[in-house]
Image (cartoon, one colour):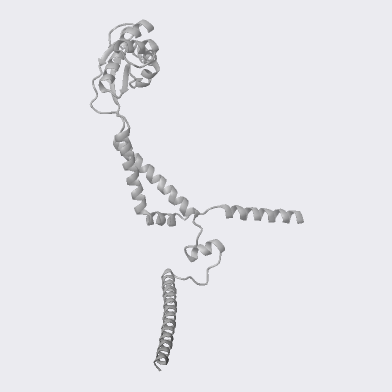
Length: 288
């Protein structure tokens, strides 16, 4: 029996320790805490948005994307309306995409345009994908020079016309949309960056305020004392009374200082009067 009692006591102590370690957060008080720092929150949001916008506008080099499109013809005929093997052609579209990513295709583009890029650099600039469930292959080229992006996209399409039939023993693909010079930059997106910067600043500020709110262990009211100790305080001194007490203490200190100054001045006057009386007596004796 004694062992069971000891185990129960240990369990109770462990439960109490676990409850003490838990941190309770009143969402209502946290909301009002945020509200009391509303000006700081708005200011940080604005500063984050301005910083992100400035970085995107002044420090990030704009890039442009040019797009060309190919239609992959079926292997049995060069007619683009052949429906009999449409499903087979659609399933092979991903194969066409992989062929366009091969080294011979990119090297032929580099040689044709006399580019200063190597195979890996050029491959990072080109994105090849299938448009939905179709046999249309889209070639996207992203570059800081819009004209160069157009030239590379068209050169890849031309290389596909040569390489795909040779590699896959199929018909030549058709270029259904050659690339043109893009008139708008594809990145950075200034508006999106501004919003993202503002939201990032907002999140950081709220996290800092939340940590400050949770780590603040001072008693703000009688309810806080009751939550901590389970006992209501006998009395609470209002903040206004504290201000009056502080003013009284300050006035009392001023009075004491004034009294000290008055006493010192009185002593100085008495000493001066005594010195004058002594000098007058000495002068009268000399005259006699």
